[in-house]
Image 1 (cartoon, rainbow, N blue to C red):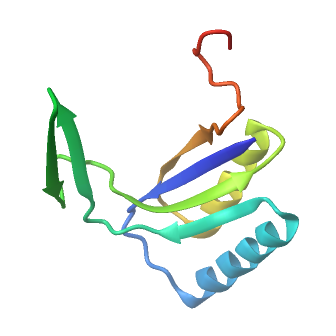
Image 2 (image 1 turned 45 degrees about the horizontal axis):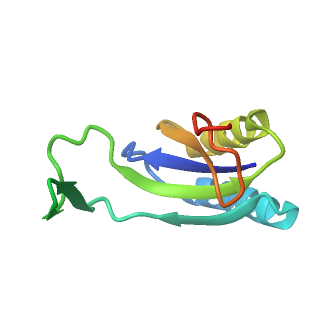
Length: 117
């Protein structure tokens, strides 16, 4: 099972101790094969919307956005519970903040709610 963990900007400080702990955690996840990709995201995204055949492109930042996603990790685990445990370990290092975990479906994966699923 693959999961996308996204973090929102908490404004917390990133010190040397946290950097070392996070580096060790990322290395451990990479060695185990659980971490597929990770990275930071520009806090000023570009929004693309489509309505009635018209495509609109709007540059951020967006004042109405309460939580801007600033980082992600794509992981692979056997269960959702394992993904949650990895997220808890991340937040025990990162400190204050928040985020979401989404299961990622790919070709051939059963998609909940789809006909025949």
